[in-house]
Length: 381
Length: 165
Image 1: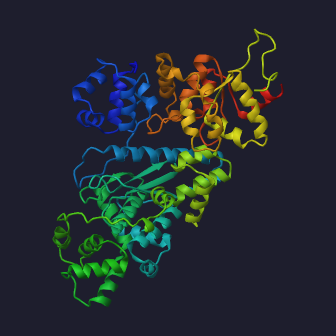
Image 2 (image 1 turned 90 degrees about the vertical axis):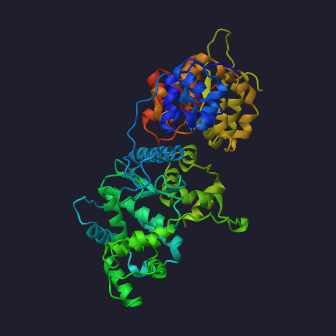
Image 3 (image 1 turned 30 degrees about the horizontal axis):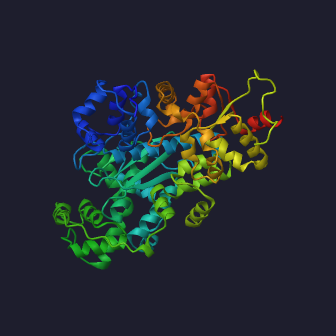
C-alpha cells in the first residue's frame, strides 16, 4: 500500500475536532502514541490503509485527511455543564453536534429556494432578569396544554411523545440521540431562524428526557444555547431548570394536587411513595417533583438532596430482555432519533422538488426507497 | 455495442469525455426517455467517453440504477488506479479544503463530489451532475466547477449534446 503525502497538522486537527487526545486516538487506531505523534509531526508518512482506518475511527470524511491545511476552527456551542465537571466532549457528542448543525444548514439552504417547506421558529423570548415561573406560565399558555390533558397521557413515554410534538409545532427540530451518560443531558443550537434541541437518549428515565426538552427550550427562549447538564451552579442553567420545573409542574396545580391527595400542612416531609404519586399525577420524573416541592417551599429545605441522595446510589443494570416481535421497526427507531419535524420536512422538500432523492436520503440519514417512504408516512400519520 | 454513433468521424477529432456524478446516474434512470438515454450512455462507455469513480458507485448502491451501472463497472472505473496517485489525492484534498461545505469536510461521510471534480480537473473531462437545488451554489458541484474553470453539464445538457448525433 502506498504512502500518502499528508500534512501532519491536518491529522492532528482531525483528531482534535473529534475531542480525542493522543492516547485515546492511538488506542482506537491500534498503534502506539509515539507512532501517532510521528505521523502528526510529519516524521513518518502514513499508508493509505492507516488513513482509511483513521477516517473510520475518528468518524471523519476521508478526503478531509488529504487537505493541505487544517480548516479554521468553528465556533462550538457554549458549554454550560458543571454537574459532572466540564469533561472533554466525547466523539459521539461532537459528531451529533456536527450532524445537527449540518442538517440545520441544509434546511436553511432549502428554505432559501422554497421558503414554505421549512417551518420557521415561532417562540417568544426571555431574559435572565425575568421571573422564570412567569415565563413558564406565559409559554404554557402559548402551548395550550392544560393539566387535565397532561394527566390523560398514558405514562411518561406517552407524555414525552406529546411534549415533543408540541415543541416541534413551535418550529423546533428535536433529536433524541444516545450520548454518553453523565456527559451531558442535551444541547440546543440556533442557526439563523432555525432551531434544534437534542436530548440525550441515554438519560435514565423518560421524565428526565421531558425535563431536558424544556430546559433546552428555555435556552432557546433566552437565545443562549449550548451544551447542558441541567446543573444548578450557573445562572443560565438555574434559570432553565426553574423554567422547566415551573412549566411542567405549575405551583398552583401542585398545591391543589397535594391538598386533594394528602391534606397535609406544608412544608411537609413527603415520602418516596408520595413523590412517586405526584410524579405520576403530572407525568414527570420523581426528581422533578422532589426539586419542585423544595423550591416552592412545600417541602423543607434540603429535601431534594435528602430524598434523591438514596436514588443516586448506583444499582447494577437490569438485564435487557429483547423480544424481537415487540421491537419497533428500523424506520420508527430512526424517527425517534431525528424527530417527526425533520422527517416531514425532508419528505415535503422532495415532493416540492426542492431536493432530489439522494439529498433526501442523506438528510434523512437512511436510504429512502419507495417502501421506506410509505413506512415513514405511515409512522408520521 | 451499436456502431456508427458517438464515434469520431476523423481520427484527430477531439470528443467530449464525461465523468458522471451520482445525481446524473440517478436521474438517467428516472428520465422519461430512460432507455434511449441509457443506450447513448452505453455507447459512450464503449468509446471510453463516460467514466465515474468508485465513490459514486458506493453512493449509487441503494438506487435501482446501480445494477445496470455495475455491469459496466470495469470500463467506468478505468481511472480508479488514481486513488493511489499522489497528484489525484492532492487534488481531492485541495478541493475538500477549498470547498468544505460541498465536501462536508467536518462530517463523517465522504461524498463523491471532490473525487468526481478532481478526476475531471486532472483529465480535462466534463462533469455531468444533476444536483437538486437544496444546497447553496458554493456547496453544489456546478458552482464549484465554475469556480475551478471545469466544464459541468446537467444530464439534460449532456443528452442534448450527445443524442443529436
